[in-house]
Length: 252
Image (tube, rainbow, N blue to C red; front, top):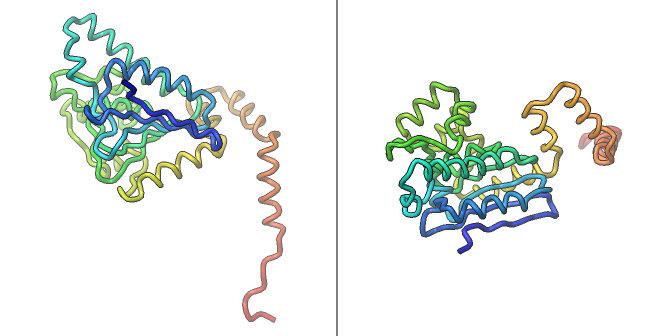
């Protein structure tokens, strides 16, 4: 069964990866993990990558409990957690910007998958929760650490320790979600953000933000400075600046 839809929109440098498991609210099963690994690898070369769920009810509802309940030993549980954590690490390390488009609720492992992205945009009617504690477990895919890096250790402990669900507006207020769009404008909104990131040298900016030396940051700038794209853009700006302004209506 194919759980993913991968759309390389190479003409704009944008790739879109959609988890499509409507029968399980886009929950992640073992087969889904394998497909995620391959799809992220296949997106190499994209200038921006969007990850989203199919439909409008769930982004990712976590791990597929019906399947994962077969894991009954500590060794099996650890192996599953290690594999999905490595996939989230793979997503976080993707060279270009990664945008999680929260088309629906992101619960448990779904919230962990969302914070592995660089940027989170959401429809205004979704909720997000690190609610693994309702199953008397904890985040294991790297989400607790990433949540703490985003909102701070105390807030992360409060959210993950109680399983509190946040609506989109509150999640945006604390910085967990970066942009919120009305449901009717959501598809247009995430595409606009992702297309803009793909159009510009955002991958270089991501690399610098992720932590490089001052010399490496300056070298990245210098490479962009001498590139044709920079001079073409500069020419457009200089031409606009040099153009005479039209006379005001009615002036003599």
